[in-house]
Image (cartoon, rainbow, N blue to C red; front, side, top):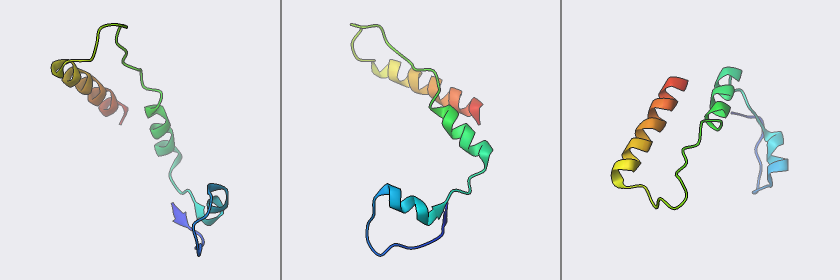
Amino acid sequence: MKVTGLLENRADAKTVINFFQDITPVEQTQAFKSMFHAPLLTRDRGTGRPTKRDRREIDELKDDFFEKEN
């Protein structure tokens, strides 16, 4: 982000957008957006909460997926 102006007081998003410029490269923007299209890990209804072991396995899967993206 590049600041193009300053405001005296807090302002709403519609006003603030006029005071900065997004200078993020397109590749990084697309990589960030693709993160939200990652496959969702779901559990069958009624199986309850994941155990500590399940949670670790889920976290490993997520980490592996996001490492491959970058």
